[in-house]
Image (tube, rainbow over the protein chains, first blue to last red):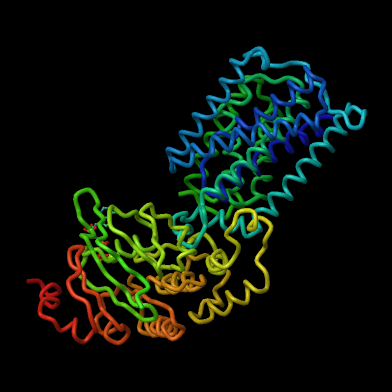
Length: 289
Length: 244
Ligand SMILES: Nc1ncnc2c1ncn2[C@@H]1O[C@H](COP(=O)(O)OP(=O)(O)OP(=O)(O)O)[C@@H](O)[C@H]1O
Ligand SMILES: [Mg+2]
């Protein structure tokens, strides 16, 4: 049972990451590979505030959102100068820069060693001890974020995002300040990723910079491409599939380090296969050009 | 009254002078046709008027207010300008209905987040799409329409604004006769409503029938301007068209 609860928690965290990245990549057509950076900012904010300063989990998550929001606003403005491949490359660059902050601000981030012994959240003096309680917490956050995302994509704002994805210059002709739309969705998405980071840090209780590298950004991207761009349901399906993948391999009885390598190979193959035969992903509505 | 006044506007693309000190006044509430050989700068002119390209020099006055040199396309809604594109540019992976709704609904970021299209928007979209027989197709993706239907959808999208000035870049090109009739009707109706239409088109028969005035461009310059029957019979105009 504990095992399923664990899988459930990890699933909700990655579902939040995938849904939020899909708002930017799938709906708006901005190929961002910096999502792990915002995930990391949330995780570090919570790890530091909770562990070193004994600040309430929810406050720390709020601070993480705020920091990720500010960082993403700045990054979004710089990225708005780039298009297509260059946008993706520049966003990778920002992920590397944010990671190097995690490594080099070692007096507060613990450098390469990271931060161990992160506490569990407490709720009106009640500490969330059991994994089951944590599952509920992650579920609540996930549901809120999913509903907010759905509200956004079904609004007039969401329609404008899809129009930006299809032809932003044509949209501008009809009176839209396109840049504002791109910045707002980028910031919202980053703040959501920060929440996933806060949940992750206090659940795993140990973080270091290697968790938030570009490999992680690529992993989240793989989830949404697998599930389907422009589909929130697709992101959930993609997350479920890729979170469970290591578990299938374990069932197959592969030794751990072989399994890890096989997993990387399967991620790579899955991406190539999708691009070739199913560019819309499992249930997606939008085909990447 | 002249709604548009262009003074010595200039635009070049690495070496090519697409608009060469072009000065031109365009009358309000009527249809002005722009003709000229390929590459004479017609599309560039439309792009400049709609803020899609920036200006190298000269001034543009729209309805007595100056349009700044640093063009911003989103200001079209302030100046009351809308347009179609010579090469169709729809929101291809969106439905026919969404292509129209996106122009009808809120354009301010915050307003748009808290707005879902309402009955009013739907009724307006239905009215607009029925004119071009696309209401039945409202749930299809734009990319899956025929060429002619896509062209009509683009025109409908332009009509979804409440503009005063309509810029149409070859709206008839590639259309079947039935669809040409539909577009003619749309353009005539705009004129009746007191709108200003600027129409780029190569089909001279259509131009004679529709336009109150015709502007002939050649090499980014104004060659001739006047009533269709006068202008289109001038020797220098015929020369440019038939090759000297
Ligand atoms: N984006 C661009 N980059 C480089 N050159 C351009 C660009 N746009 C237009 N030109 C050049 O400017 C000149 C005018 O082009 P424009 O498209 O305005 O002509 P046009 O009158 O619309 O022609 P057509 O009847 O073929 O549509 C041409 O020589 C064209 O090659
Ligand atoms: Mg042209």
